Length: 239
Image (cartoon, rainbow, N blue to C red):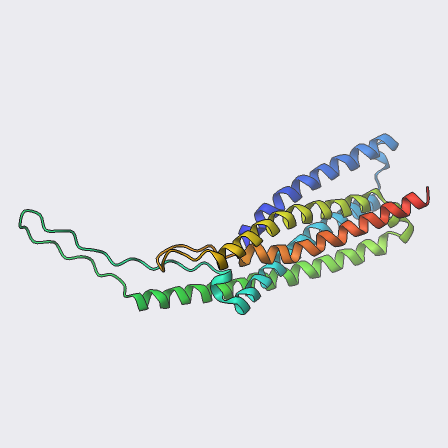
């Protein structure tokens, strides 16, 4: 899961820092940092943790979807299968000297059993990691959404710059991740089904991880895009 989380959290961190700078600059323009109350800082904290916990939840769900795709479409769709080791060919004799014995090679059946155990272990690990991330992230997200709504009124939420920054931040992250994962996931899926590996000793990239990320993040991208569009129409209608 860390392989998916790292490239998502890096742009998220950069966007959060940019949002913080913009927020502080805007507060300086309207009256200085002394105008920032404890309540304002608490609201900013709720928005910040809401973004981070939402992303952790989405990543956890995508890992569970990856495991589900592997269960439905076959384990090699989601999990790397180590290629079989080709049997070693003894070198030819030189000058009539005897050829030293080759080291023992694992039998093909033993290699296949090892492959199956590795895939099963990866599946269990994803179920544990994905389930933990989805549960903890979702719990933290719900708690901070509730806390934020307890502090802000509906009118404040509609007019709040932090709320608009929150919507744009989630939109930016989900769109970047959604576009990249959708393009890569569709390509890898087509390659998986249309371009067969040369033989059982060749590597074949599993498309399940990227496709699962796209399945989770693209709907979130669409939701927040429509939410911001509705907000823009509402503000335009109100002048």
